[in-house]
Image (cartoon, rainbow, N blue to C red; front, side, top):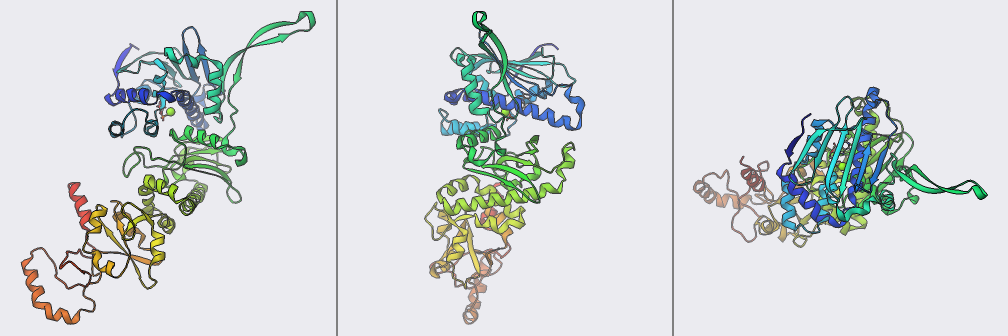
Length: 557
Ligand code: ADP
Ligand code: MG
């Protein structure tokens, strides 16, 4: 293969620049990222080989090896995982797979670039973190049945591709360390980083270590140097360990390993189910929303890592959690699912449905407890993930009521910007009131000044404000909550006509006159709902609300 130079996409070079500058004080994470990639690569080939043994080429002695060369000032992380061919290299290391890179960069610029590990961590820096410690990175890789390929870059504008040297399947990433990163050549430093970040990794992380040993007895005694492979991690699957044995620190590092998040999780859910179905689950609720996880943005699927009796099966098993809980990260290790079947067949297994139901109910319960016991923490969670959670009203009928229990809204009785549980609104309601009254608006100010509120205010009825655009789409799916139906304050006959028979006759002529004058108005009615304003426009019971109409107009509909 002739060597060739290719350009990174513009956003990528910008991103590389940002990563190296804003994460500098945390640059040791490059090792976690590279070991994590090696581990993923091993898991990938191992899973594929469950159904296609040939892929192994007889090499299934899984290892992630660290080797340093003090003279050349290089550190190499190599694995016998799946490897990459030319196409995969360009695809994975030459472009950024994340769709929202541009939006992300804009946000970084806006919120200030310096020292913003939180933000950049939400993005997941991955492989590119190598450029924080190296001024040149060489990836030599080989896939089953393909030629070895070499990728090389200085992390600036371009990378080159050429012939690789690897003779066996897998990948070697060699870092030409920067002057000030020589510490990563030291055994003690590498050892402590592996311990800190990667102790629970299932595959051995090995390094050649030279020790002086004493040999012989008495006069024959002599010191000799022995170089041996040493395994640096304990490889204990954290979810299988007893909760009492696991520190918060352990949980946090494990969370970062599987989520690529930079922050600690907000909540850890660790339990084992026994009886009809046996499995262990270790789940995390993140603190911050990844930058691309919005309605319609980013990946809509939940990514739970599935293991079957400790064998890693997949990191994106769709059936394990519904999309509206996609912010939850974690691991499920099932005891009675079949190994050695294709993913498609496994995907259909009814056992998965049962596991999913169990996980969903655990997660909803955990959130309910957080809401009841730690409301401030719940508020933070809600501001990040509330809109995603609400999607569940539409898709998870069985749990609608439980999801509704978790919803918060501004109402006529909260200060602007303050939220109140929907459940509290209903509890505070007069028993005779049959409907939960709501008003959709683009923002609090508009809602507040709406003439539709006058009547309800006079009757001291609390009105719930739907200020999130998604509310109007998903809330109707609820139909009712705690036995109360939903009713829009600005639609239909809320307060119209009733008890107005007499007056109606008296004003008939006038109403007809007004209707003639206003083209486009379907009907002119008397109403008791207004207390101060002389008139207001209402929609039909089933018409689009002005708020949605405005949204549709903006979207060019
Ligand atoms: P992520 O791991 O979140 O996908 P990275 O930036 O860490 O993002 O890696 C990008 C991609 O490069 C990976 O998804 C994988 O396809 C590929 N890759 C990286 N390291 C290796 C490796 N050691 N072996 C095989 N593929 C790798
Ligand atoms: Mg990675």
